[in-house]
Length: 128
Image 1: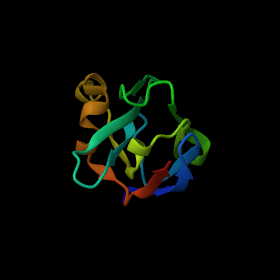
Image 2: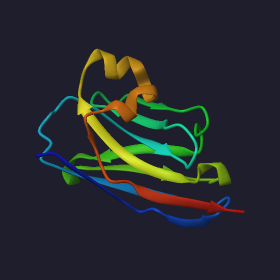
Image 3: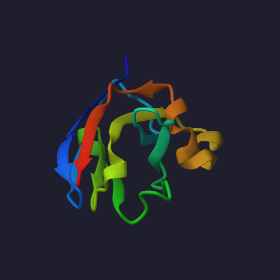
Image 4: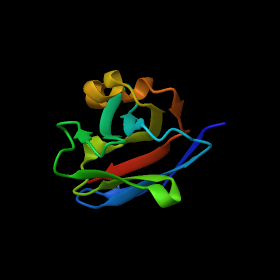
């Protein structure tokens, strides 16, 4: 059974940084698409960052240059480093994963919220 557990959220002032973690267990695919999406109250879900098993990364335009997605295969953990945080980054952040396909690769961040596996989310609140 695949489990994804996020951590690292919290409250931070604008301009600050946070690092989110997503610990994966029971995930046996060696080819995959994984990523982070977020949802703020009253707003649509937004794909934030994606990483593909071949090392390709993709980012939403709204976070390019500020967020970095990475993974530690030895720890089965996915990370999202968030710098220069803005008020509009406030949201619940979710980790998600799916078995690799050309579809998930080509869709980039736009389909992350559709992935079959997701965690419970971690709240990020940015205040100015």
